[in-house]
Length: 343
Figure 1 (cartoon, helix red, strand yellow):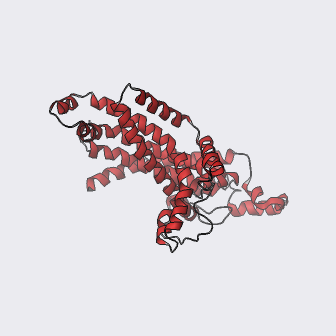
Figure 2 (cartoon, helix red, strand yellow):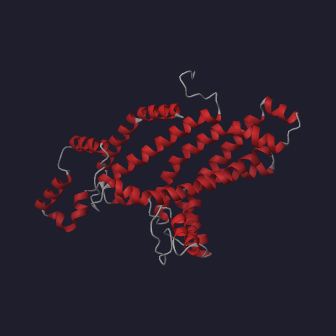
Figure 3 (cartoon, helix red, strand yellow):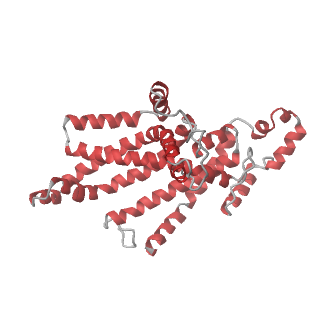
């Protein structure tokens, strides 16, 4: 276990240049977007050159770009990502306040994608070449091709507007005042005095954005499961297992699926990045108070510290998860060694 964490640490150190480049790109690109945060902040008062110059100096925006970047980078290394220009709150504090909402939505969407995607892929592989296989793969292709902003609006029109089964936006009904314990409303609602009624409200608000976010990962997982399982089912040891009279379900689940899980887990890990990018659109459409909606509002307000810090934190999470997925190979397949003898 200690060796595992040593390898993880080395991998994370190796990703520092990637994070450095991401921080530089985010810093430069946001400043190339038209719009002045000082003018947006001051409004009509921005017409006064003295007030404008004073605010620029206070925010440090009067310095050369490279000086601004060096100050930002040196502070970020020490854990200080700056303060929001709009709210004056530390960026890390705002991020941590909104991150549980995005994490709850992302985890729910991935659970839906995995619970449905794996069985659908297994069935498609077992029924290869049949009408059912073609239907499942066509459905997965359609699911992968649908833009989230379009799919989310369609779900709202059907289930919220026409059928009235789910709320349009938010995380919970305004009639409930749930104290924050874990940051996950599905858990906090159960711990509150309102109990199941509040929990039911959180599920009603959660289901549509989770489906909207989980559709693309579901389609990808189903197609990858089918492809990986078909490759494994053609191996000789699977034929030998069937010849020994092992029940088909044991051959599929205990022999074939275990060896097919490596590419599937790879896809699941890569889907984390799409989940976070999908959260930007999904949270905006459903007014979900997570980091995606927070980032969109910050871009519109040209809130430089929030955009820079948010992108860096999101990139760090994706890098960490991808490294963990890479190291998981050694657990599922000893041939994918992470040790020094790896060829």
